[in-house]
Length: 486
Ligand code: ADP
Ligand code: MG
Figure 1 (cartoon, rainbow, N blue to C red):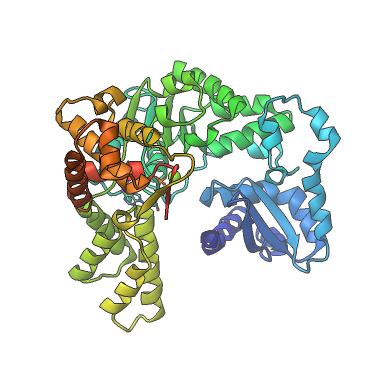
Figure 2: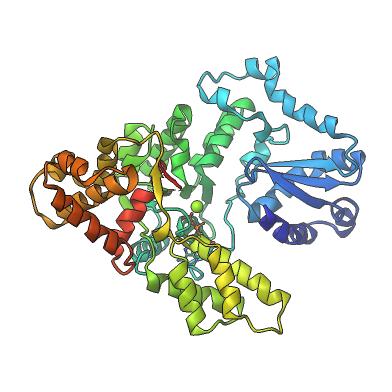
């Protein structure tokens, strides 16, 4: 995670501010960031000696972890590695703890999650006091409402966020926010937390991804700190849970979350949840949780249209304090039509180039080179994975995206949304399954010319990013995990 590397000096600066100078100089100034492991959940730091390692582990791991997590809430585990590499085996002793019989028998957990624990995710440094430290809200100051650009595709979500900030727990509760990747869920969720904290500093706010919740839950069982876990999640005024889809299939974690949810909700505490899909579409999740999620407000952030992308681009360019000419901006906003994370990726590359050669103007051919490496969503072709290889499943997917039933899609009704869904389903059968026109026609009990017409129409309109409704629906179909890009 190169990003953490970039921010490492901030972590050190934070520690420097909060520690006695000589303590900082002796023990921490020599710490170096090495790498992250376990998908960014573990940070490996390099220390000069074994003595240094032991001392940091016992005295500073809590404080260090907190400082790291201010910027990177994903991180749950630090490892201090001696730079000469000679004492590596010592470090691995910690990891073996969870494989030991003692650890297994001390755990009362019988749920299937136990078998799935990646032992490297935890180590003995994860004392309950570290994990369930009430002062940890996991908010990242980078994500604010002020830096979140309001666009046509996130307008509703923005307004709901503002309403939550005004009266947490009173107007909309729970709020379930979903969208495709990189469209601002985490940013908005974090921004809600920041703003409430700014307005009402005495409120307790907790942000966690559902993965963190899961890790905390498992660790609490391993550490026998169930009470601390319960208190941590049930004692807050605002609970922000990011990417809830990760608790899919984790029954015990779902149960723990269900109880935390109920208690908070009964006490009018604000709950905001995000996901990459609507509640009903999350696989292997208990029905009672789905119904809780649907109690309040379910909203989505759509895919951005050209104007949305241009306004976010302008905002980010302003912040970076460099300008591109209008033509270049239009080129970027046209080409990068997937999400804002990709837009930021392109901007990072432009920024790197401009900083590297500050005196040379940024030429069109350089932009073209950067954009050439980028695949437009509308030109990516899709194929079906073996999980979704029959027309019935595909048609069902289209039905769920358009909110129509299978009976309706096969019917002769010409109601507008239904007719569009039917045409999209026909289009998808050809695009994704390579079905012929007559074969598709047979499925829908129609003439093959009807299918041909549908395919032509949708093919053409799918390239029109101004047609945001169709565009968003097609993106939603394409972002289904069972569809693989070629
Ligand atoms: P998600 O959680 O939906 O995958 P993120 O919140 O991580 O997406 O957003 C991806 C990146 O795009 C972040 O760096 C975020 O700051 C930025 N971003 C997303 N939406 C906006 C917006 N409306 N205005 C400004 N930046 C945005
Ligand atoms: Mg996110």
